[in-house]
Image 1 (tube, rainbow, N blue to C red):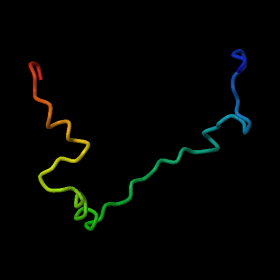
Image 2 (image 1 turned 180 degrees about the horizontal axis):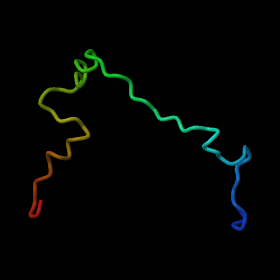
Image 3 (image 1 turned 90 degrees about the vertical axis):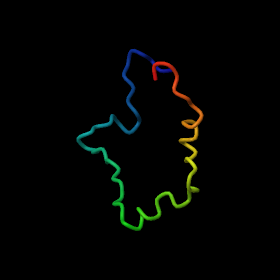
Image 4 (image 1 turned 180 degrees about the vertical axis):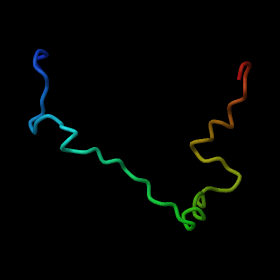
Length: 63
């Protein structure tokens, strides 16, 4: 169990952001080919799985 009176320092030493810059992931560029293929695997007229719940909900009072 950790001794709560001493700060925890990993074996490799404390993380120093000056020495190890955070790498931000970059989204690849979208090409015309990507735009044409986007949603090609979805059947037309159907909602994707992550949106199916929206069809079942009906607006109630105050919505």
